[in-house]
Image (cartoon, rainbow over all chains, first blue to last red; front, side, top):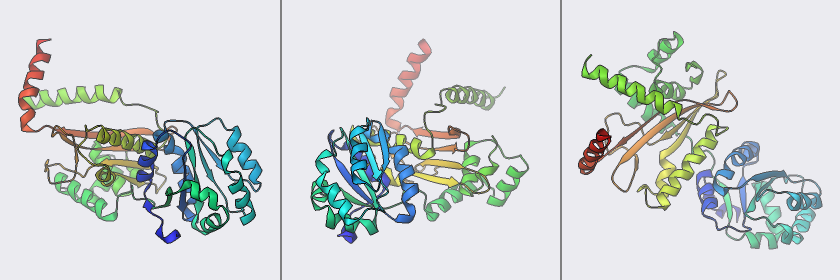
Length: 198
Length: 142
């Protein structure tokens, strides 16, 4: 099932959250374990823009009962639960049994790595059934420019201003680059945002 | 003073006034500001104001980063660079035919993040020129 999970970029996820009806709706997001910290940080910064309500990030504790208690005591309308690496099948079974206590005005999202998703599927089948089709595998970093897109923008800048990347960097290093937004973008695209005059 | 100088002076005043209206700290990171813009564009598309479809918005609203050498600078990009105003180049478009693109530079190193600079250009189709002329006339009468 994991290989057949629909891919979703953060943009697609956010848009889905934005059109979700108000209610206790939960989503599961599968990410690469190496990206977990960065993904949690990005999600925590931006999800509230689309849910239009305060959110709380809760790392799962080794004790399922502690997590459920935190869920019930939190005043935020939407929750982001993560850090399930220490959970065993028995923990997921307890979580599954306590699923009726996962009640928030806007619901929440479980974020876990693919290596633990299988355990959840096998040991918390009722919760997974409740989530239904809202299982997604994160297609990370799609919001960033590809190398090809970066080069297209750089080519447009070079052509318009009639300058090379090296000339722009040299001008910036000698504090002679015009303080216009186009040159600022040029430096960022070259990875030299440090040269933008403040 | 030449017409070009007058126009330049006019543009500088507008830029200064516009810059004063730029929100200073309503976002913590470039990702968060980009998220706000994404929501605004999504809503505009849903409400029939923006002709650009949801999946097209994903491809047009992009991010670039420069985080080496002590920098923590991002660029939010809306549409491809289009100095020659070529409508074949991917852009955002309203249902009335107006089309636009933009770019915003953000420095995340000061807390909260701050906008270093931005540009935004919206182009009006010829069919709207009579309406714009009328608006300009009304404004001049005041």
